[in-house]
Image (cartoon, rainbow, N blue to C red; front, side, top):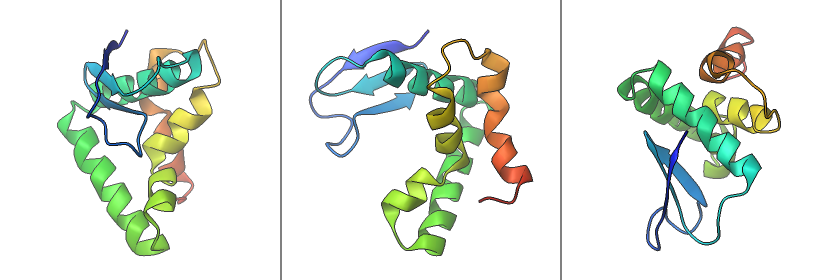
Amino acid sequence: MALLVNTRRFPPRRFHAITLFPFVFYNGERLNEREVRHETVHLWQQAALLLVGFYLLYFLFWLVGLLRYRNSERAYREIPFERSAYLLEAESGARPSVQAFHWMKYLKNNEI
């Protein structure tokens, strides 16, 4: 389970929550169940890729998306980790192994 930390200054205003293993930082009101599941998916992704791998790939995916779409919001939405987390956040019973590696399906389909 994530260690939830409510802060005033982090994450920046345009983000509601950011997961930095093992913490989920959020600002404002409490996270709802769906948001907690979304961030938990990121925890499993980070653990599976030994943190550094996750952050390097995340930045690389975002950078490629930014070059491709010329729009930071779309680049964010197209990151395989985010696409997976948004899909899995609706599933309350997804196994950790599914959460950790589900993002790879977007690589197999050449959707990045």
